[in-house]
Image (cartoon, rainbow, N blue to C red):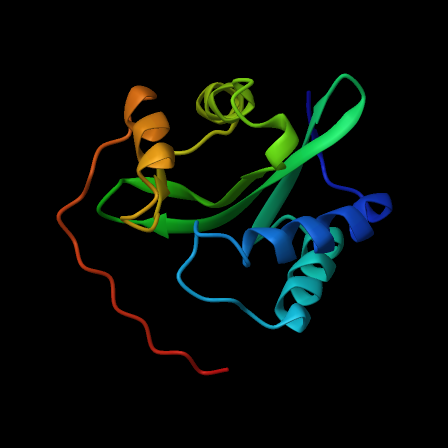
Length: 145
């Protein structure tokens, strides 16, 4: 059901990521060049990021993008669930929840972390059911690109 991404997944990943960034799960789109740059990094190495293709009945149903960082606060490796995208025709089948279980049981880390748009209540409910809790942090960014 979940397998690491390979070069053969390029077209699917790029199209699915473009759909993700056109959805209400995010607050803005990104250039396609960012998506292809991410894919190239995923194929080159899993040092900073990793991705999984989610399949159901032999069909590609979505993807999950993970990023890795080290946190003193968490006491070790933190894996960020950057993106979890399920194609519309595969939603409400439990694939997202199954991937969260897989992530908790198979990816070694001190902490799993994610962010989501406050308007994405459906995703928030899924994450809460799987033991994630809201942090009272504000995040700030400074884009260099």
